[in-house]
Length: 437
Image 1 (cartoon, rainbow, N blue to C red):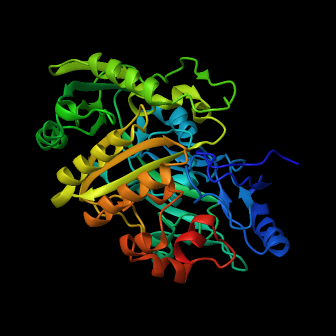
Image 2: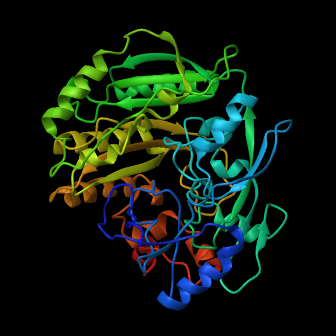
């Protein structure tokens, strides 16, 4: 029997029994067998969802990572058709040398193609290109007891919309076809500077976001008083000249899981102070490879182990523009007051490009994301943060969530009932059962 599967945050601690799908032709029979034996299941990719959205209510999942073949590519148009278990890293490995890049990429390249669709991932260029779903041309969809469907904006459009951001609940995606974006170089030209206040972040964002493809900020989640809201602002674009080489530098790995989290108030405060000071106080041009720009944590394999055996939870919210600055300031104040948080706290503004997905997370506003080691008092902090987000009209990201209550979910995602009406009744996650029960 294969090793059990978990979510990336290792919370909740509910191991999943994997039923691997090795060939597309085997998928219908595998789905039938697992459902017949266990009542329900859920497709599972490479385990990069943080909470329980990737965990089956039955704890029996269809492991799709082994569906990892490319079906066809068109390098003239930048169109890739591949099986759902292919990772974004594997797409980049063949696309970059041909002068193409993912139109939208999240903060990890180790998510699968199917997972990127199911969570409608977004990235540093949401203000320019929207979500991953905006660049999905079509995909196959396997539903229990039905023939394989092809879904696109023109074919089965209802299921197309429900599946993008649908958390794997509408059916199993065996293959998908996406549109890439052209690049001249694999390197990134960026402008970097540190800011001292949250107001400065919003001023920089208003000035620079529309001038660049990518925009993101790191924020010091422990800074208080006059230093509250300080951080590092980064905008970037694909270089206009240079090579199309892959980033082949070796990666490091966390070899084992320590008994307790290595992220604590002392280590966090020391890191944040050093990280802020190492960045320039004035606008500075830099050039980097694409991996450190897009995927800084991917340079360390198994980095989730540093949070210890109890794992961690990520808190990611988005606040509408009208309330963003005040609410984000209140969120950061509550987090700093708790003395908890992560060394990678990401602050970025989302644009107004609508996703085709029913349950897409981004909205025109500001997103804040950071990790928290699992501790006894974390629930109390999250309740305070939830209250701030609720009052501001914001919402949490299901792909990162392990605690959201059903009332907040249903209020923030009113289209959930449309998804429920189209859900394959044999597919249900622990997340969906938690927020819709």
